[in-house]
Amino acid sequence: MSSPSVSHILDSIAAAGTAHRNGEAGSRETLIDLGLQLVSSLEIPSEFIQRTMWAEPARSAHCRLALDRQIFQHLRDAGDAGISAVSLAEKTGLDVPLLQRVLRHLVAMYMVSYTDGKFHATALSNGLAKENYQQSIAFCYDVSRPSFNNLPEYLKQTGYKNPLNPTDGAFQAAHKSKLPFFDWLVANPPHLSEFDSFMSAYRAGKANWYDPNFYPVAERLIGAFDPSNSDVLLVDVGGGRGHDLLEYSARHPSSPGRLILQDREPVIASVQGKENMPFEAMAHDFYTPQPIKAARAYLLHSILHDWDDNDGVLLNEIVLSEEHPTLAATSMDMMMLAHLGVRERTEADWRAILARAGLKVVYIYSYPGVEESLIEAELE
Ligand SMILES: C[S@@+](CC[C@H](N)C(=O)[O-])C[C@H]1O[C@@H](n2cnc3c(N)ncnc32)[C@H](O)[C@@H]1O
Image 1 (cartoon, helix red, strand yellow):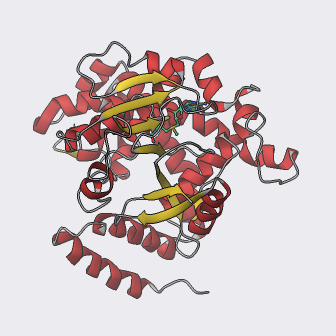
Image 2 (image 1 turned 180 degrees about the horizontal axis):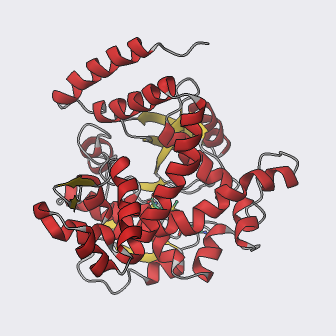
């Protein structure tokens, strides 16, 4: 067995704790990772089964229930005073004993606290009360979970082949459909809207490539912008509802040039007509030729497809480490496995796929604790 000893993990936690107190980037994520490592080292199989197979599914179900009955919002609104089971039951319509059992489980998992006969919100439950996380819970519970539940049976039926078919995967088997994932979202409201919220939420709170000390925006993007070439600075291809461009322009208010958001028509329709957007929204299918030529850069954030006719390409993607794959990276790979028949890639995979598209990697920028790197590439 090559796993580190408990005492070694505890030493690492102490060191990461010091880094965290000093505000070092990535130290919070390191502590979480070490916490998982500690649990895995200490836990015996019976505890593992209890946690993974009962406690976690029950907690997910309770989060879904909390969304239906606005439980996290009521806890938040109760403030420091907290709220009794009877009052919360009145507001949410749950039986008092049922509510107590549900919340006790969340207390046991440190998501809610209980003192002096009152339930209290935590920073985590307050965060989850926000709309984009509520929508994310709905998407993950109603759309993703059935795909994962169905994965072993699907793989058995398909002879344990790496799934590659975008219209016949675990997702389609679970949802009894032959539609590709993105078409299914459009055909099944409100899941498209939930998915778009999920995309804006699932990495919120982490550094973005346009934040300080990540990618040299001033030098590589803005400094190299030549309006005589094209007045478009950046095209966000498959940019959803534009959360990246919104944040980008908030961080770089004097950034020159036009910003263009592209996505499928139903997604673009949900942002068109909104006032004061710092970008132009354009319906565009990225399987068809790019209509905006010679922009300074094309951003592909969590998008993976062939590309042509461009100045620079900024791929904001997970670069999977073979030696130390992180939970965030492998979780996303599992999402890809169960929903889209595609995968996350290692650095060697990225270099190979870009070379096939006639692009060479200029540099790969990364930030501590942030899963997605910024791969800058240009035509060879
Ligand atoms: C994984 S999401 C990434 C969204 C955003 N770039 C981000 O990273 O948060 C993929 C996006 O690609 C869009 N998309 C899927 N197929 C597309 C197509 N054929 N043409 C344009 N956009 C597409 C989806 O609507 C979705 O917004």
